[in-house]
Image (cartoon, rainbow, N blue to C red; front, side, top):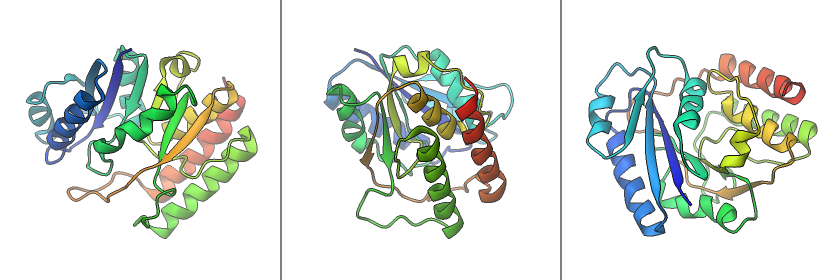
Length: 227
């Protein structure tokens, strides 16, 4: 069984090396064969140089296109039986990868989402962001019957069969919602596990709560009715 870890990257030269090294360390402890793929969304800092030093498969988009394009490129290149996505900005802890993988390794789930809102530690997030996530969660439950606390989390593990059964179109941050709706529609088992979440220390998030929120909402509706 091969694990593929996909790390999307855009202007994360200060954090990506640390995330890669910690991911390597955790995967060696897990003991399964693995590959780490870093997919760069045409960064204009030294992210590529930082990632090259850490033993990964590295890919770069020809233009800055968005997270959806980055993850779709990573999915196309990944060879693993289980595919994991984890952010490169330091907000996700690689040390929690065993918890994210366990339901799949025990064949209790096909897609596992690391939820920021199942942890006892409060999540420091804008009220608008938190409110938006609740709306998205509620709409997804109405459409699919699957109750989720953190539909927008990018820390995920999934069986290869989940990806093979769906066509993804999302260009940016709406990819998490599109993937979740289509996974649930196809009858796959979805589970959540609690994770820690740290606000990025360096740089700034590219998410616009209003504009990206509207696109996420639209993607949920479209995914419900489009294959």
